[in-house]
Length: 452
Ligand SMILES: Cc1cc2nc3c(=O)[nH]c(=O)nc-3n(C[C@H](O)[C@H](O)[C@H](O)COP(=O)(O)O)c2cc1C
Ligand SMILES: [Mn+2]
Figure 1 (cartoon, helix red, strand yellow):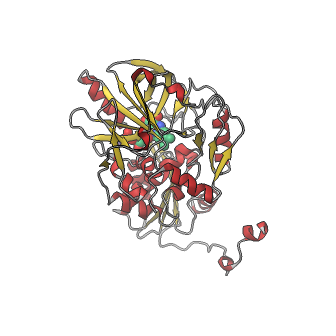
Figure 2 (cartoon, rainbow, N blue to C red):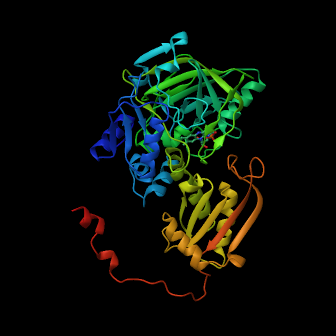
Figure 3 (cartoon, rainbow, N blue to C red):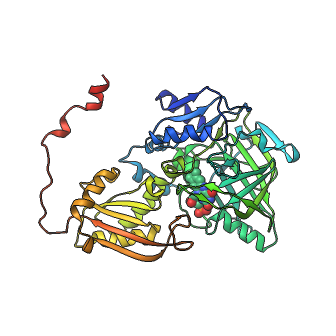
């Protein structure tokens, strides 16, 4: 079944007891984020805050707080997640332009548009203000018209002004850099409350010039329909809860931040581009979707996981037939810690895989394990590290490599020392036998027995 509307996904979750409605009055300052944090820490359900103080707009959070919910959003299983995602990448389709859609039910243009209509949360203690954290920002290259769609944070700076954080080489940053060089304003539209397929498509690390929304149709199971914006020359998903349109004026800078980021640390306050809101359109009764960002695990981490794993898996498999599974753990903010399982086909295959993974994704800590290890279970992974490695031969250090910008331990911006651990048994050599209990997989599920 296709899921083209976020509301259909919420209904599915509710039917499966995966949606919790919070009816108590909730403060948008720290309470929404606090609930989401507690819920994420126990891999809980999605949360719908129906009674946000001083607002009639309900807030949806924790929608992607764990992998179980992400698999439901992709309508897949753990075994099929990566093949299904790669299959979708082979079935890209241009969105279809339609006349109108639910995002146009209410229109506020110009002075009438106000961000104060939305109960934007304040997430973490030192955050400079309220943020949009789950909006899909759509913009175009002013020279060749190629499109981009990705998630970036937006700080509410005034009723009609947003701070924009899209550092280079992220594509909105490039769009804005090009527009500024030409002395032009850049048009931007932010879509909030879109289908899971649209949301997840934005985390595809598509090359510059490739529109991420061409993946949304295959992910949601039906072509994506888009409508024209009111005040900018852009197209946005027709089924969305809220659309914010605006322009980034060239060379306009405003202080932005601090903001608690996905590494679990604050990023500093400094001058960044900002966007003037020119219109807000929404459903009659919009739901505001938010994503927590901060100490893992959060929606921010889980959203990136499967797209990164699929790209990495496809890349490694081109060269290394022994690669089985790849997983980026939330504890590494997803980008900093990767585990790969390998059924080695030749001596030292694991080591070449590790080096390739370090260079392909800029991963800081990478661990290779044999195929008998459950790469999703860090306890099991560390058992392999403890019992199958010797530091003098299995630890590889790659000093000063290009890596993630926000790692607080970095010596300077974009630099990191990467570390790889070959926790595979040596290829072709005898190794002590792993303890096993015959028939264990045929015994009843203890959790089910216990709950009865
Ligand atoms: C919830 C969430 C929030 C994000 N916030 C930002 C952000 O504020 N700035 C940013 O540059 N990337 C942010 N990202 C990461 C980008 O969306 C991601 O790296 C994307 O692939 C970049 O796309 P691009 O290459 O088209 O720029 C966020 C991701 C998620 C899931
Ligand atoms: Mn892009």
